[in-house]
Image 1 (spheres, one colour):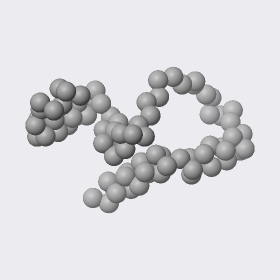
Image 2: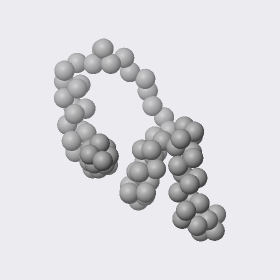
Image 3: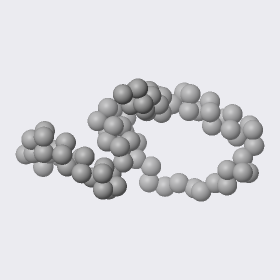
Image 4: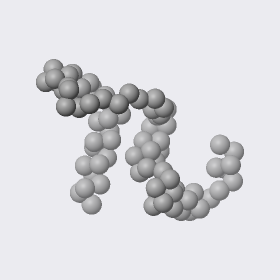
Length: 85
């Protein structure tokens, strides 16, 4: 973090833009981190799932979980606002 304090805002934003454009960093990562750093969650492990094997109940549970997930809802709102521009 001490490195960031030495860089002015314009240089930091330019570097973030460059990394997003080069595919080294996702827009979602930038927005989530800047919007709610205290709630930032980095997923480091995952299990691949064959979506065709999920039941309707599995999908209902997943949808209900996302409806309750505050971070996900903020992301949806953010993407909705981007589309309006």
